[in-house]
Image 1 (cartoon, one colour):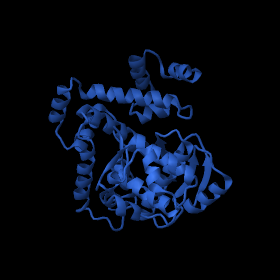
Image 2 (image 1 turned 45 degrees about the horizontal axis):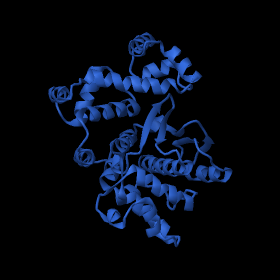
Image 3 (image 1 turned 180 degrees about the vertical axis):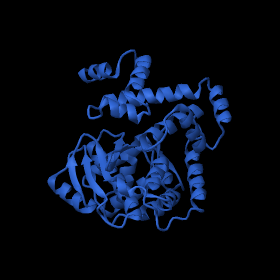
Image 4 (image 1 turned 180 degrees about the horizontal axis):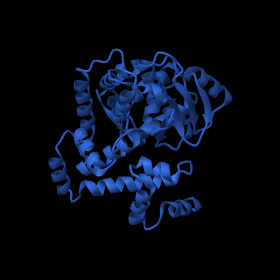
Length: 342
């Protein structure tokens, strides 16, 4: 069951109270009680979380940013997450840390990195189909990303643009453009573009000796959220995130298995033994993840077959075609035509 930190509801409930709205009545309609919100490090299930935001956005349909983007939100509410993002050696490592550990805030979304010659595109996928909720969570997450960027880059020229896949007025576009210092347009995905050249600039204040300790703390908190996850499910999630967020990695199965073991902090032998207890092996999980990602990308016409092949780690188009035919019984191009036709 996916969950979200109860701290999120606490924060937005303060705004409800300031608007003289009966917050207890609002909570009652969501099935949330005040005791749940007072529990330290408490969690709410996704269904009630979205119900809360459905009511909240009906009262406050416009997204407001009350301060300049910085890491104070993370430090005030999710201290370990703020620490690992503010102490990474480079901006890229900070962004990857946020993606890795943002489940400490909530698990009802996915984030994908797409690297091109001159920019990094951060794509945000919300699990809500309510356009007002989507607008709220997308803009707030992009605002957090921008806060991380500003921690590592001094000027405002890093941002290249926002592309938003929900209704937005001309005035809202103008306001967002002034906040993010970039163009704001409609698009088929919710995407935030930043200059690639800034990704590997060293952080002037990073403490390299402290970072492993902070990462260990974040990892421990993350694992506490998911005690019931099988090892195969954990491996599947890690592989998906590696494909989505790691920009320059060797996607061969052996290399990916090494990276998974590093994140789980176990040996290859231990991983194989635990997966065997669940009657599965690493190769089977990796094939499943690759198939799911190939199917998803083929449904998006803006991605060429070559781009999809490269993003999944195949050395050439022929290797991808052969893999796809073995798994799906047809070529990628045939699958795309059939999928689009439907």
